[in-house]
Image (cartoon, helix red, strand yellow):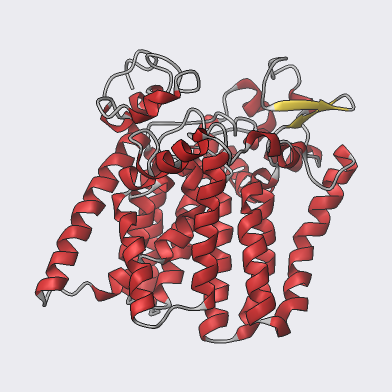
Amino acid sequence: MSKSQKRWLWLVFMVVLTVYAKGKVRTSFDSGYSVHLAVSLLEEGNLDLEEYRSYIPPSDYRVIEVDGVLQSRYPVGPSVVAAPLILILGDLGKYVFFVWDLEIYIKEHRAEGIERFVGSFFAALGALVLFCVAHLRLSFARSLAVLGIFAFCTSAWSVVSRALWQHGPSIVFLSAALYVLLRARDDDPRWSRYAGLFLALAYTMRPTNSLPVLILSIYVLIHHRAQLARYLAWASVVAIPFCAYHWSIYGSVLPVYYRQGASKFTLANWGFVEGAAGNLISPGRGLFIYSPVLLFSILGAILLLRQKRWSLLDSALAAIVVLHWLVISSWKIWWGGTVFGPRLFADMLPFLVYFLIPVIEIVEPASLRGRALAVALSVTIAVSAWIHYTGATRWATWDWNIEPTSVDQEPSRMWDWHDPPFLRTTSETHPKG
């Protein structure tokens, strides 16, 4: 990549980050104490919320008390990786915003603005890593197109960038694992060792990433066995501290959040069938309704097969996506609570976007077939971008979950084609938003 291209890429990254950060919607729900945890790590050297006890309501579902100490119910991984960025923001705040003590500032004010910026940063960083993935195969310009599709045509914009969700860092690390495994497959097998580090990091962000960890570890065992010891060594850099920390808190190598979900999943009833369909095509959460451009990921997989370029790694990635779909569909609350669109599919975006690359590669306006493909791709890109724009900028699209009734109490609303969330323009909860 030339210096000029690197400057353009940096500019594109800043544009994406700015657009994300300017989005009106802030969704500091489950992640509401993620910034507090990061500041606790920076200021107190721990990852508990005890110093915020007077600030936190007694019945707050996001915290649990362990041996008299308030702990986060959700993974602390996102807060740990966000801490360096928050440290930088804190230092800048002293001179730009005149915020001299970040911990006091967070106690006295809401941390949603900081959280949205940090979430936006990770979402934009994920787009940058996926550009690198695409650029292994595509030209600079076409790789930018892939970056743009991920950044503005998926939940990366409407959900992931709205707060410090687990999904943002998860996407970054899964994308990085994909990049090094592609380099190992096509260039030098030694790249595969670093996948252990990135996959371990991805697991500390979100427990459903156990699927990529398991399947890609088997792939490394089969296809890069000579690198397996180094792969495991890199993984242990993260896995050992992760397990040791949680053992010291809970007496278990896994936190409560990772151990509590088994009873909430089932494959043996009609709810699973509804969830499987709903996660793909429902007006409330359907992946292909909110991001129709990702239908071309199926075409991309077909092209790889027809061109005889399908590899064992492609099989592993496809298996991860399908199994992830089955897992999230088997959850009793398959719609994922009060969110916008297919949030539970967010972690799979790196792999879904990867399968778009063969399609972007063959778009050629010089031929009739190429023009038809370009038109179809452009239409789905425009629709996808508009839908996720509404999710990032209109509170009404999120308030749809609770107006007129909660979707958790009336999940049939997920199938109301007369009132999809992205067509909502007014809200009783946020009348000015």
